[in-house]
Length: 389
Image 1 (tube, one colour):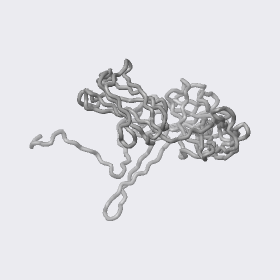
Image 2 (cartoon, rainbow, N blue to C red):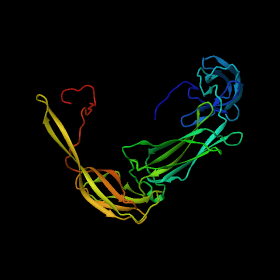
Image 3 (cartoon, one colour):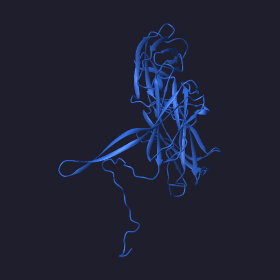
Image 4 (cartoon, rainbow, N blue to C red):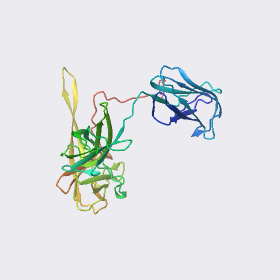
């Protein structure tokens, strides 16, 4: 627990909100500010009287000030301020003061900008929520006027990007299982096209998804329509992408295993929806990391330690989960770092692998890789010692 000592009322917190995120000159700025004190465990009731609220423009000038304010039953202040037509553009900062303390708070800020809202809105829709390589992703883009009717005679830019993600199953039987979908490619653009909106303000675009280097991820589809000022108004939607329809997951039964004692790892196969299946066989290999060190003479008379590491198979398992988890049992003979590599083929013959690291402790000696600059800190119990101690 971190000790945070302050003077009285030094732990008061303040935050606020406005009716909209951005205002224009001439608008009425409506606001609400909340104030809370704080005890050792939670927020508590703050003093109710003696507050002063100021609104500062981007140049730091006070343009709105209210004194002698009192918190309502909800511990909040509220009000409104008509922004003049000559208001300075930029961020306006709220500042809260109190008669009973020297502390000041800045609950929020709001942007005043000379913007012109678009006369239309954009939406896009996809023809599914899960896609695979070779599937056709169809995007329907619509542009509609806020006043009603279609926004036509313009172009829309449709961009499709694939972002890698970690696969998780929400099925209760898959709780605690790790599914390895990591790849070297983290994100890539799989398509971009410019299409014309028809007389109904609609454009339909089909894209055949390539076989990407990403195993599992999210397809982010953006439709951007150009307005009469040359600016783009955009809308986006997303869907899942999975290159295989069978995935194997692994789960540890313990944090640390003992050398010479029975150990086990659970495995489970699910489909692209995360539902357990019973039609896929799994091959599992238990490997131990073998680390070897050699002293090699470098420049001059210096000797440099060079390490070599290699995963050596020590045991194997195979089986077919029957829509539920099964276990791979083995006995690690010596201490060290282990891993289990599970492989499964999907219905199209594509292979997916999941790796899970394990630690085994026990008697004996091991070689650990030590990177350059590795040091072991030693701290004595006392600063001074006498002879004989």
